[in-house]
Length: 50
Image (cartoon, helix red, strand yellow):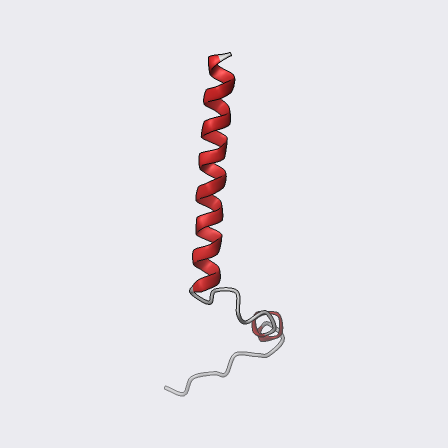
C-alpha cells in the first residue's frame, strides 16, 4: 500500500512540474505565433550574396 501512495505522490509532482512549465511557456510568449511557422516552410530561403 505504501508504494501506491508513493507512486501517486510522484505522479502528482511530475504533473505539477509539467503544468508549471506550460504556464511559464504561455507567459513568456512561446505560443503566440501560430500562423508563422506553418507558412514559413512554403517560402524559399533567399540566397545570400557573398
